[in-house]
Amino acid sequence: MAVTALIASLLMAQATVEAPAVEVAYDELTSGDTAAAIAKIEREAEGDADHPARLINLGIAYARAGRAEDARAMFKAAVRSEQRYRLETASGDWMDSRDLARRALAMLDQGAFASTQFASR
Image (cartoon, rainbow, N blue to C red; front, side):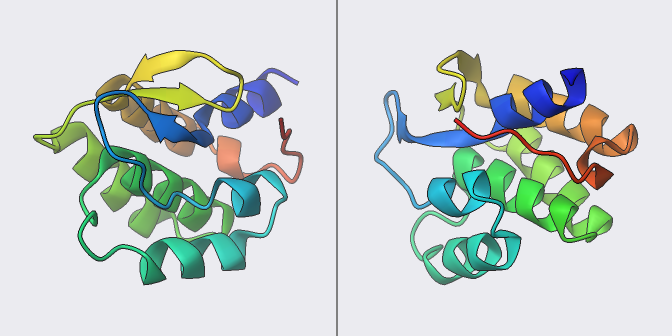
């Protein structure tokens, strides 16, 4: 149950503070459509490919698809990003993008994304 709540909190909402909205495939991720999320984020990346919310959600989608190294690369890129934002999570909390990416890395290392149970908002 705790893992499910943590995963749900990593799913980004569309809105960000101090940043223009970017495509993060929120609906696809919350509905569990991993392939559609990957396709949408990759397709809509032009101009915002390095946005932390996009990197984090693409990492989540990659992790769910079993692409752990690709997920790790996305989360690390979000940690290293010069862009830093407070992002709204699916649970309504606001977190620093680097902290959220670090949490995602820790969850990846713990195998949390291998779970088949995911909560949605």
